[in-house]
Every structure is written in structure tokens, then in C-alpha cells.
Length: 337
Image (cartoon, rainbow, N blue to C red; front, side, top):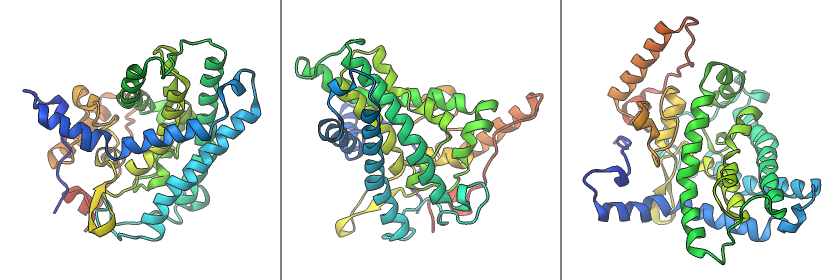
């Protein structure tokens, strides 16, 4: 049995269905992944980040500590997920989008090894650039150069902004992702991420440094939106860690007692398969609004192919992004046999 087509969240249904919206907000939007990222963000800010006054003057050691924290979090969380699903293979190919395992011996990857390639770009480039952005923002806060709203004095606002961070990042991701699919940036930077057609947890932020500069710039939104330093750390850790389950390659994770919980993001997995679609997330369905939505159906696949053919015929260069061919099982059911 397939996993079904990707649908819009109840938030966008008309007429509104308040009960369905509430159920979705609690069981899909908040639980379990966003709740986990908030907890990790709080832990990272409270116990794993130098105090704000340490950033008042340029301090390379403080940046180094933020980098080391990023590496530690990724090794534990992303590495743990990779170990469980791909090394231990605890659930085999149950709920896996593609029956194949990760590539070994393919030339496009550093060391001709997909996992080692992905780990390299994640730990060396992603963790570094994320640490630089976060440290820059903390330096601005430490020197009162941007507007700070202390969480204790405006708790309701801080909570609302915490939950608003997720859709704000979604909009930012769509914008920079569309930019990365322009000819120059795709060839020079984004194609590195798209070497990963069959994806795994370490694929999430395995990107070219140029792409990292765009992707990890999301905390700069607090230059315009009054916030506080802990939200910067939450945003930075969310950007680093949340792509791991969404790129895990598994739709569901089997937990104790044979129960399953939500795993990967089929919406984004379809982007890795077909490229010219699903640039954003289903949380803020900008792809729906701008005509690049792929719900996993055969009809949507045909529309992607038609759109690509039209682009190829109208561009003088004839250039379009490369199109990967998915496995037969993914095309027909969205999961492995």
C-alpha cells in the first residue's frame, strides 16, 4: 500500500474546520518534531552556548565553542538517526521511500562514498557557517545594536514568536531555494546537494558553502523582527538538525511495540527526485501558490515533465536542471517494496 498523496494542512482548507485545524496543530505541527527542536534549542542556549556577555567583543574562542556545540549536536542526533536506520538497519526497508541503500563508489561524491561526503560537508562547512551567523547575531545583541524583547518581560510574545519561527523559516527556505535553482547558482553550488537522489539523514545540510551562506542566513530575520538571543540559537539549531529526519528517506519510524511515528518528509523527497518542484515546505504552501506543487501523483509528475520541456524549448541555452529517474516503486507507491 502506498503512503498517499501530499495534501495541504487543514489550515488552508475552506470553509475552515476548527477541530481539524486544532488536531493538526497539536499532532502534526507541534508534535513530535517541532517540540523536539524547541527543547534542543532551549538546552543549547541554556547549557551549551557561552553567555551573551562573552560575545560583546569579537571572541574567536566563543565562535569555536558554538562550532563545537554544533558538531556535537549533529554527531549525536544526526549520527544517531543514521546509525539506527542505515547502519543497524533496525527497520530494514519498511516505510523507506527508495529500496536502495546509500551509494558507495560513485564519483560525484567526495571519497566516492555518499555518507562520508555528506558528513564532511555537514560538519566542516555547515557547522562553521551556522556558528558564524549565530555568533554575529549574538554580538549584535550583546552590544545592544538590535532591538531585544526579553522573554521574561513579554512571555506571550516570546512564545508566539517561537512558534512563528517555523513558518518564517519556511518562507525563507522557499525564497533561497528558488534562487539556488537558477542556472549559475545551481551549477556552481546547489548541484552538490542534488548529487543525493537517494537521501539519508546526513544529506540534510550536505551543501556547498555558498548554499550554506544562503540557507543559514535565516537568523538575520531578527534584524527586522524584535526578538531575543535564545531565538537565534533556536533558529540556528533548527536549521542544522531538522533536515535530518526530513531527509532520512523513511516516511515512518518504528518505535516500541511496533508503533510508528512520523519520519521523513515525502514532500521534499519528491523534490530530490524531480528537482523542478516542491522548493519549499507544505507548512507554508508557496509551491501551491506559485505552481510548483508536486503531491506525488502521476498527474503531478506529468506536469513537472511538461514544465521542464517548455523551459527547455524557450531557453536559448536549452539548460534545465537535471532530472533523476526514481525507482519504479517510488513512482507508483512512494515507498519501497
